[in-house]
Every structure is written in C-alpha cells, then in structure tokens.
Image 1: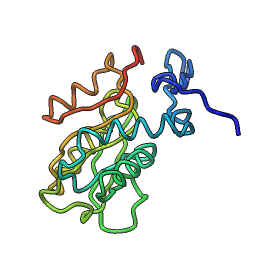
Image 2 (image 1 turned 90 degrees about the horizontal axis):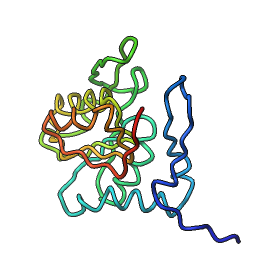
Image 3 (image 1 turned 90 degrees about the vertical axis):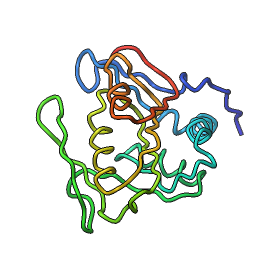
Length: 181
C-alpha cells in the first residue's frame, strides 16, 4: 500500500479557474474529502471549539454541508438536520427564499427538525456572499433554533459573506481563506 504524503489542509483544496464562469476560481473540496488525513483534520478543527458545548443539532446545507455536517454531528454526539433545496423534503416543512446573482432560490427544513431553544451549529463547505447561509440562519431561527455558530472550511473574505453572518450576531468559524471570487 502506497503511503500518502501529509498535505497542509489548504493545499488539499483544488482550485479550478474560470468555473462556473470566466473570472471565477472554484474552490473544490472534493480533493480534501478524498484524503483521509485532510478530511479528518478539517472535521476535528471544526468540532474542537464546540466539543462539550451542548450542541444539540448540526444543520448542514445541501449538499457538501451534508458530508461535513454528518461527520461533525457524529463527533459531537448530536443529531443532524438537512437543509434542502426546495421540493426535496417529504414531510411538513418551512421554507425561506433568498436572492441569487440572477433571480431567487429557496431552501427548506422540516418544521419539527429542531425543538425551540435547541443549540444548533450550521455547517457548509464555503462562505462567499452568505446568501444561502443567511437564509439557513433565518429558517432555523424561524423554527426556534439558537444558532451557536456557522462553520465553513473556506472563507472568501473579499466577497463579505462571513461579515454578513457576523452582522446577524452569528459567530463564524472558518479554517482557511482564499482571495478573490
């Protein structure tokens, strides 16, 4: 069996220029997820500040937030709540619309996904504009959750999404930053 080289966490992210459109550099975490050490280090780093902190649910934003959020919930010994795109949940749900660059989108959560007062950690792979994360926070608060923090592997600080969440009174934890879009 070939030994894997120990890679710095930021080096485990693949950058793809001009995707999904010219001028954008897509930060791909699938390379981090496929490397067992990097994946473990990222999850451990996101879990550590909240271990023993009474987190009752981890809410993951579709889809990469499901991968990270499930692993984090397992480590924190708490439940996992999926925040899905419109039309994907089968039971009674509440939804929240949010603005995109061109148009709007909607996310949903089951009405009984959290109990009022539950301490929730929101998780996704990357924070850019903060539009989806803001909608997720508002949706969770609408059903009574207390948002302890929002955690992301990557922050694109030039776009301002993390600050947008802080302006909502939410602690933001990220593991690394990349300049630009």
